[in-house]
Amino acid sequence: MNPLFQFNHSYQSLGNSFFEKVLPTPVVAPSLLLYNHALAKQLGIKEGVDPSVLAGILSGNQLAEGSIPIAQAYAGHQFGYFTMLGDGRAILLGEHIGPDGQRWDIQLKGAGPTPYSRRGDGRATLRAMLREYLISEAMHGLGIPSSRSLAVVTTGEKVFREEVHAGAVLTRVMKSHIRVGTFEYARQFLSTKDLENLTRYSLERHYPEVSIKENAALTLLEQVLQQQASLMANWMCVGFIHGVMNTDNMSISGETFDYGPCAFINSYDPTKAFSSIDTNGRYAFGNQPNIAHWNLSCLANALLPIIDEDTDTAVKKATEVLNQFPSIYTQLYTATMAAKIGFDQNNISDEVVELLKDLMKWMQAEQADYSNTFLTIEGSIAKSGIYASPLFGSWMEKRSSLLLAAGIDTVKSKAIMFHRNPVVIPRNHLVEEALDAVVINNDLGKFNQLLQVVQHPYAVLGDYTNYQEPPVNGDGFYATYCGT
Ligand code: AMP
Ligand code: MG
Image (cartoon, rainbow, N blue to C red; front, side):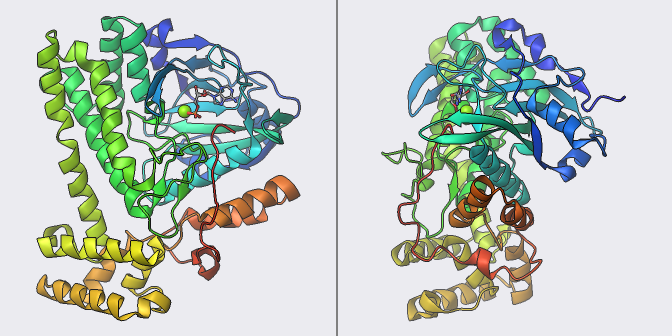
């Protein structure tokens, strides 16, 4: 029989200080609950495999052929404080090589304890893994780089948190799990040679087309900065809050990952933070670009010894790169936001920037729904309520005159907006309803419907009114939780 994955283990060439070999801990009763056929196809995974065989492999009960499972070592700044971490409940089975030659980490999340588990049980709750599956696939649908979800297997075991939960294992697929925290780990605990090897490895794996200019470390810093600036612009334009942007949760490849207490905003509020542990709003919606910049400074700091032998020179060179972040981010953000109101890249004047600022101010004052405001501007949702107000009307008039001055007619502006304004996002109340139905009533119906809709957020495939309505009482006390 052909193996399920075409495994390779290039990461292990970095040497065993970067990981620990560890086998998944078998579960009592693995059962395949969700399987992402479209992703499986893209990865070139053979079709028609018996679900019980998939459940065995994707729970870790049956070691996938060719796998040399490891837990990766990393450190990280959590809420600003440096800590040694490592994969405490995720086991990397190997790097699957897809039909196009792309290398994908295949990781089982919730596969049992590892040497990095500290006091954790190495397990994951079904609810949290379903949430990660749904939101990661929604992000992919939105065209935003993200880890992907191949499967959820229920374990038949109980997981003890504040309450008793059903357990599950998620198969996470990602270009790699190398993080800012991996570099912080190498800098703190390993040799300069190891740090250098990790840098070269990361460049070859994620940025093979980039030629090294001054040195590998600065080149990598520049590339990661570029990707993260773009990722932040993407998050901000769809209203996504990651919720726990610790440096161990920021990937070198520029993919969104580690979906814990993440959520989408309904009404526009830059100070919004849903995460129950983010009491100071460090990871609040509007603070995300600043935090990305801060995290990149942690990456730069880790790279200093290989940027230049002379510390002052290294700091100077790293700072020059880091200082580019605000302007690169602002340019990407402004371009995408301008597209959301119908202007293309070549028509972003100071007046358009002012127009956007006025809109944001108005949205915040009115607590306007973020996604629906743009759909209303686009004409996809009828103007009623706050959108029928004279204030909004005069903003729309100003916009029309600027569009006219830029020579952008209605057809063109609609086309520009169309791929930037999602018709649906996974709204918190709908996500929770769908999760409740599975976890409490064992009913996958709502979950699968919502998944189908959020995977295609730019195409209206039916009546989406339900999916577009914000929760009746706003976000109220809605809170999200980590590590469950
Ligand atoms: P996260 O907040 O998911 O990024 O996790 C932070 C750290 O805690 C990582 O090192 C995880 O591997 C670890 N961790 C989270 N949950 C568990 C668990 N249930 N058992 C062991 N380690 C865990
Ligand atoms: Mg993490």
